[in-house]
Image (cartoon, rainbow, N blue to C red; front, side, top):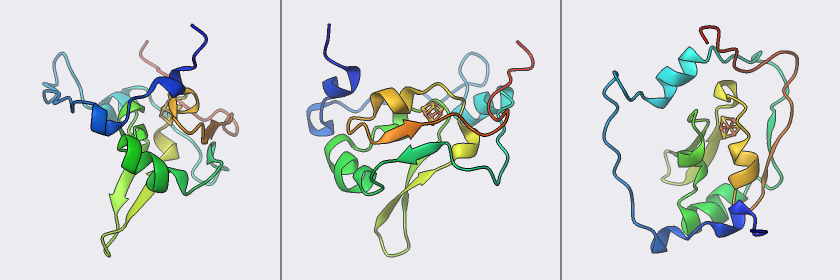
Amino acid sequence: DTKPDYACLKPAAESKKIEYPKPDGKLSFDKLSSVFLSNTNHEEDQPVHLRLTDPNVPIEKNLPLYDEPAQRYCPAGVYEVVSNDDGSKRFQINAQNCVHCKTCDIKDPAQNIAWVAPEGTGGPTYPNM
Ligand code: SF4
């Protein structure tokens, strides 16, 4: 199969929304609890390691066509679509929580996100594994 994964994404209008059950805290867990267990950390003043080639793509293209999939495929909740006071939307990147899986680099339908190696030793350390 030579077709890249990002080129196989179906538009949101052709897809059925999946309602996931809430995490029970025993067998299933919310994203941020799992990020906490990974002991992920990046220096707050380091250069951002998640870069957008075109900062307008998430809201202008990915949101209307794909309901901006980064909100869902990122396992660490790094990407959020946030409403401004005036009703407009903005794409927020919480790079501090990134667990370095590189899904965004591979999966973004516009190939607009570049994951670059973070400064120093930032990232997850999984101290209890
Ligand atoms: S590399 Fe993984 S954890 Fe980090 S922002 Fe991309 S999808 Fe999220």
